[in-house]
Image 1: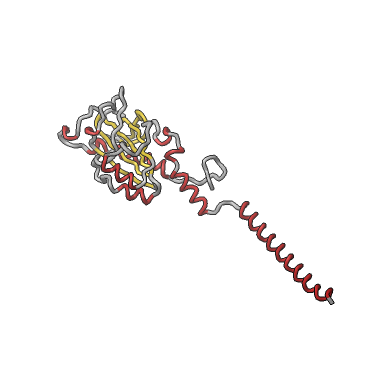
Image 2: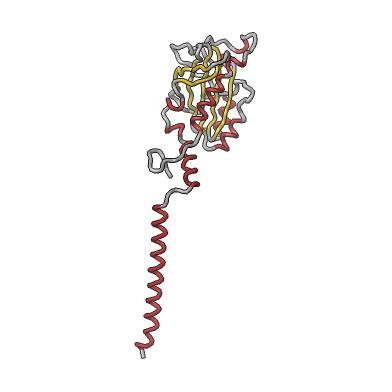
Length: 239
């Protein structure tokens, strides 16, 4: 009698064991597929976005600010601005005017990188500044504090290098500025004349003299913010 009653229990136990084995096999198969599959398009896009946001610290300074930058001169034709030097500091404080400094702090500024260029005729000095922010939304908000009409204040503070023709370029000598935004970056420029004369000392303003400064900033921003297809497994990528 007891043996007959035990038989259904054995069947049930065997069935449960089989079900568990099948379930485990399916789970293992799914896990294996997950581990061996390639990244999805969404994952690739996220990886590209992360790589762009990290370029301000992963790229060499000379890649962010090339030794020369092309621009079109006021008289026509392509010229090249020459890099005079790159700042060794990246602190947000002190790199921009006080009013802009507080706005960048509220936006979560990560760093401000600066380099100074000289035009081909060695008459105009331009400081280009890269502001790294946590994301695109905060970059858009931070951009609003800077003038879109070409006024240099509030803006990036000029950076002069002693012993070069730029050593007279001070905050008082700023005569034009620009601001551009793409992704988590702002790129600011400020320009003045090598003799350091303040804007008020110039009889008539000639905006075209300084307009190429915005082109320098645009070039830096384009290189810094343009995504590229992730190379999963390569150094610097996380897919």
